[in-house]
Amino acid sequence: MSLNDAVRGNSARGLSLMRSVQSRPAGDRTAIARLTLAVLALVSLVALAVSITTGASDASALNVIGALFTGSDDTALSMRDHIIVFDIRMPRALLGFLIGAGLAMSGAVMQGLFRNPLADPALVGISSGSALGAVLMIVLGASLPPALMIALGAFALPIAAFAGGLLTTLLLYRIATRGGQTSVATMLLAGIAISALAAAITGILIYMADDKQLRDITFWSLGSLSGMTWAKLFAAGPIILLALVVVPFLSRGLNAITLGEAAAFHMGVKVQRLKYIAIVSVAGAVGASVAVSGGIGFVGIVVPHLLRIVIGPDHRYLLPASALFGGVLMLGADMLARTIVAPAELPIGIITALAGAPFFLWVLLRDRTRNGW
Amino acid sequence: MITARNLTVSLSGKTIVHGVSLDAKAGQLTAIVGPNGSGKTTTMKAIAGELPSKGEITINGHALGSLEPWQLAVKRAVLPQAATIAFPFTVREIVRLGLTVGPNRHADRIEAITSDALAAVDLSGFAGRFYQELSGGEQQRVQLARVLSQIWEPVLDGEPCFLMLDEPVSALDIRHQLTIMQLARRYCEGGGGVIAVMHDLNLTAMFADHMVMMKNGRIERSGAPADVMTDDAMEAVFGCRMRINGVPAVGVPFVLPHTASA
Image 1 (cartoon, rainbow over the protein chains, first blue to last red):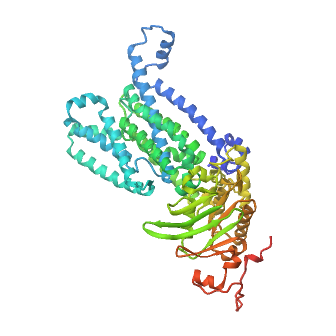
Image 2 (cartoon, one colour; image 1 turned 90 degrees about the vertical axis):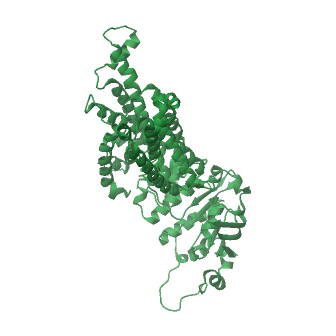
Image 3 (cartoon, rainbow over the protein chains, first blue to last red; image 1 turned 60 degrees about the vertical axis):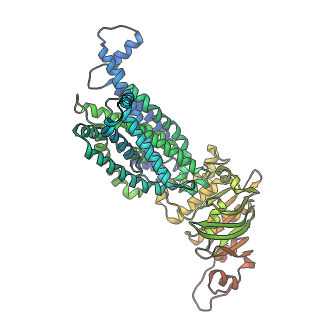
């Protein structure tokens, strides 16, 4: 692979783009990492712009925005276009980007914390906890006090999913922590058990559900970015954004922890505090994402994995790059989801899994012998 | 100086180390030897602050418990017995992890120390290789370079720094065993201190200033190698009758690191 060749100093086969890296000392991927970050930032802006300007409708975002700036009251510019651009496409693009960024970065954090490239928020039960919360609300919501349901309104499902994810995580954390020390191995194993338990309870609820509820559950679990509103953006966005801002401060600690928790402590890291902040941030970001969009898989594993091949595992670059790449990937998948069968829409979770799983397998098989992971 | 007084360590209810007291002085290489399961590594981990223990541990007069992890990290660095890494780091990136804390975090210092540390463990030219592709002995030396870079100056702000090495030469060929032991010696000569858990008694005799012999979680003998390495001590600690400075009677060849010329 040409990028690896560039890293190893094989300039003959390295990309010409990476030639500048040759002047850096061997084994130093800082330059590639910075270049990748800059490219991803640029691509993110383009993806957001394309996402807002294209869609099933022919509404022109440029006309709408132009009208805002010139203040012209062009009658040709209908109210319909304004609504499509501002109230449908914009919140969808922004929230979609945030969800992709949150899921990808959460994956990178979990993999660093568990020192396992296959770790994923789904693995430790956060996703299944959220799913249980959502299904509980779909099936049993009708038996809650009507006043409460009216008060919660459209937020009932997101709140239930978020609470489910957070409660699962806190429970896991309690189980795995003894004497102030969180055992990562216990947490991983307990996560598998709790996932199974949550899936079983979800199964009971599905068994109890009527036909309409079953349809709701199915669509929710497939994952979708449709129906994103400014209200949902304001509900889930700040939580994801907070995690995106906090987590990069953990990168040096996560780098150290790849050598083991004891080694990280020897290198001056407050390991317990690092684990606590990382776990709560991930639970928040994933809970909020799953709450508004349902189950969108593979972003958390594929994105950090691909980036590690190019820029290496240094979390100072891996975490922000994962966030940007995850956001771009999510917008790309969403564009496919809403154009392939337009004017209908595919659930985006189907696209991420359909494209993500084979691609991931291909990368694994290709790199298996060389990198031994 | 690192001191431990009446150190007792229990792991899952079983007491592994019973009331151990030892001093590791700056400028000296202190070697801990003993049979498998005698508590050498556990003692070292307790002194490093990694395991909870009863008793008193001080580093340069500061109580261990009063120091934050980052304060400890500039006074001592620890080489673990084995380290597996799940991610494809290059050798240079691993060594640079050692420079996360401390006074050498400026980019130019990082470059210089990374190269010097790799040269010190005889791995110049390995910086661009992937850690996972190296042999066990090479990985051990990369880790040592990382540990060394963490406390590159043997004396920082007038206080000695300490290398804590758990079996630093266990996976190495004889030439590199000597390289690494000489490196530890130089660190002591620079004013720092070294505590090493050792299995090779010949290398210990050659390089250690102070030798601590442990058995069943207690210190059996301690002192200069010339004083403590006796026939009786060997049998008492290792349960094996051997003659110090004895030459084998029959014609099986033997080779001692003592005879190596630089």
